[in-house]
Length: 476
Image (tube, rainbow, N blue to C red; front, side, top):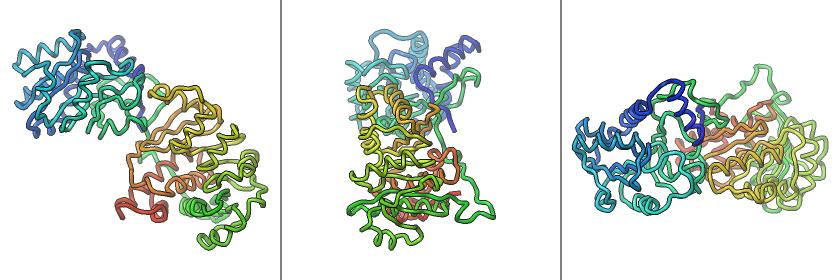
């Protein structure tokens, strides 16, 4: 697990290191730059033409320091493109003069500098950019994105920031975050701009790091309860799944199978009467009955409502909200939850993809902005608060916001999971974990789903959700 930092906390960290720990700013810059150089050294040495793009701020100073280290280490394939308005910070000025005095090629002509470059090191803007990049910087960003070069960004891809609208940044192939990972690059709308993310040497004293309530989960954070030797079907968790309508029978079947493979002992499906034969045939291990038989939901350890449910069973969701001890809401259930503007009455987890999340926004935060990282994160917390639910937003990265206002992030980057039914599998996993009294069912379920996807991809390449389910139980 790693802590993610926004712009303001990152600046506070830098200020504390200097003011309280008496570490000079130039020392912090040198440490950061040396660490970055060691990470990208091979890229620099293997490129034919490297261009360091240095803005007028301290991020530009970082880029210049890396360029100097590379030059002193024997790289003669590099040049520097200075891009600024004539103003520069004190630290950037120090690094610029050092580069000029050792004989590095320096220019302000972008077209000439970028021509034929096969590696660009981006130090145009760092964290703290206020508003969208303006001319001439927006034009330079566009030129870099159109260049046929590998791009490495220092700290964040320039044009990404807590107060910058999404999709305004440089598209990097690789990003080296300075000392700590930055939350803005892990937003679904920004993640692809960052490419492969590395974290440089943690040169800030631990005491300089402020508290942050956003954490990045890793595979090693998966913590699954082990079955006891005397566990059997009635102690492994009883799950109810409410869903299925019309032609949509697959979603509840996938969710039920996923629940079994996650360890649930008993699964009961509530669906339309005419669907019972086909669902029973598809999953004979589950009990299958009708929506009309919905009663005593409090006898189940956890309830999943929504897969394939359609628009005609709002009463089933209302009953589940009122009676389930633990509730997971997915798919059509989320749209119904939003349409009815409900609040959870017990422990509830909702698992929307971005389209379903938009429905929640329209109902609970209609007038809220979500076009910058800062506003997106703030609104996610608000949706969680207003619905009184844990929200798992599913995209290329997954953001999990709970009632305690802490946020967990899973850097999925697992496109093999983008297959029909994958979300139903996730909801079945989370419901089974909730039934087994896992207090972190949303986090552990998301990590388990990701790990199963990687195992399936390793075995099959691409796969169906049925194939995915068979790998759930192998993640331990």
